Length: 205
Image (tube, rainbow, N blue to C red; front, top):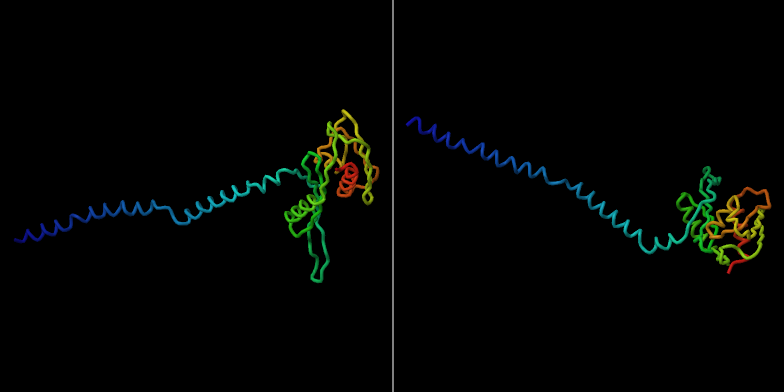
């Protein structure tokens, strides 16, 4: 009679390891579930991808129609009551290399904002040059802007011969077989570019 309770105790205690074995896979299954933070990052990646797709829409296609090149960027200091306040001034040339070109100037507290303002200003001031069949100009043109003076002459078979920002304006306008020469000693890139645009304005449509 004394042995029977011990057998019952042994029968009751034996299922315990089996229960532990069943509990172990459940714990491992819990560990296999990814954390919520990972899901958020994955969803965030999808959103960023969605934004990338939106960037490639028709608005970006219109922007890619023009090529741009910075000709000057500088930091401007303005003295205020509390000290100096710094802004950025950006000047660029915008053109489609098919006869349209413009020069823009933009100022802002951030460099990127200054470039965006300069791009909008260049689009507003854009001109369309009347090019020949060989993408040259029909006649000599000369113009002066502030202290900058430039002359542009057609030169068949020589390609594009110019320097300073005058070359940038002629390249983005798509002009070839011309010779551009600065008649002044000014080294101001913005004024030289504006002088080139004023010269091309004489043969614009």
